[in-house]
Length: 438
Image (cartoon, rainbow, N blue to C red; front, side, top):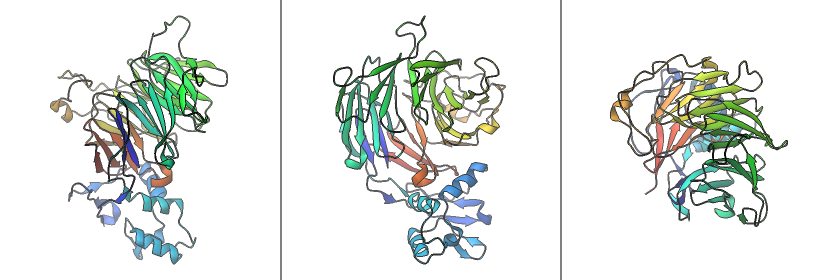
């Protein structure tokens, strides 16, 4: 299930999920595959992403060998759901049940292609939206001060209607704690607010029906509106919050100590996106308008404000980063109209390569991407793979790995300026679906 928050509406896509029309033909020992999306057919040979992540993804989303075996030494992929069920009943795998990878193989063949249907409508634009980790809740932040938490399992009922405090411009980001008890929200202000998302009250008015505690990310010499916060994320243990700001910095707030614990002057432009790399909390990923993704290791700061590594490849600013959760792989959405997949083991110690002089001037907030820029390649692109087709304009459009529990993180999905949600196959230079909001 994928949902888009666009304009003043929240739309549900594919609540009733239909089977994607895919035909596959393995050739050359499984190295080349022909795929057909539901929207267009192509005979173009497509190559798998040649990286360790290919094997990891297949292990997470591939069926048991005996379920996919046609003849000795020859496998057929994907395996139909009927054949998977028959193999389970006949106990081909010897386990008597589906493994998590078997379940992901079945579920990953079904993508949301119906809809969208209107879930809610507000009188201001929806700027941010995201599911909870288990998919049971959906959070949408609106420019008109409202943040709504929808209970997906209860027919998209509004579980919490939060009226944001001290809002400046819009709700720039929200993050739900791992235990789903607290929500933090940010604005173009150094004050991030935290609210009890698990309380029984539906209406949450700041300091009237509930306390919206302010977490001050500014220093003593900063003014009230000295900078704004574009991105905020909880750590996996829920004890810390990391933020990216308009003053080119990364901040870490210790919730237990109730104080700012770290500031890094991280980039040479706005830090649009930050996140923790894995459950350890040691590694932080950041993305900026300076075009770089950076990796920060809190255990070993060799020099002040020096990253553990830099990832080069984007030609324009980075709007969003999502970690795979393993401390190795991440994806980034860029204003160069592309998503890039990264392996941090291939990062550089510093930014050693300049993409060169740009022969064009543009601003993504009100201009289309220049046609001549689409042909430009970064001379030192360190990414594992690049995915194109969607449009990153007007706002900081996000991208995510698909859920591990249902798809084995086999897909990448992203919003787009053309009112679509695009779904890409992680291992193939192919998008499966373009889900349009009419």
